[in-house]
Image (cartoon, rainbow, N blue to C red; front, side, top):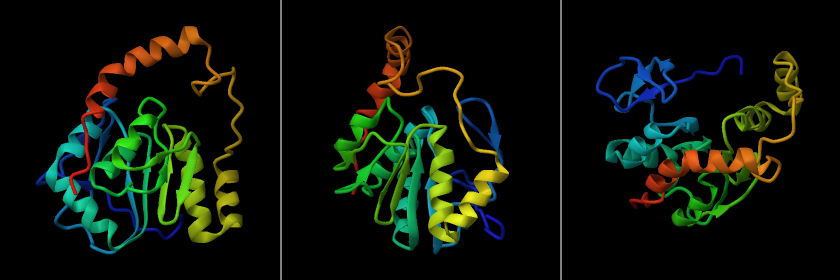
Length: 198
């Protein structure tokens, strides 16, 4: 969105780059302490090890809980919903996340919804990775209107036509989905231990 100010917040003491699960480094712009208190959108991204670390970090959870009380929209994509759950922000809400941990949202008092984007009042959650595009367009539409979001969609030439069937558990052949489910099993096992801390 043109004119938007984005703060990339780190829970480290300084602004050194943070390496993602896949090795891509993100350069933060502000620390937890220096992030403005009032925000339009509080966004929590997902991942695996980083998600678990953030969901178990008291300073991060306190920050998210505090900023959520001064924010217009509380949001997540992929497994970032687990962090919102650990902060107690999913209680009584409909939400989505990556398919591998979708059933775990109920351990935070949420109603898991198998959808790419779920909006429940001020809470907006997106499913796994590529659903972030649908999520982003939903946010832009809420803030700037559908024509603006449609213009963004056209600029990005977002008109997905996957080269083959799949992408969800229900549409992916078992010979693909079963090994992938097994691959995520250790992460799911650790994520199943997370609980809300409020």
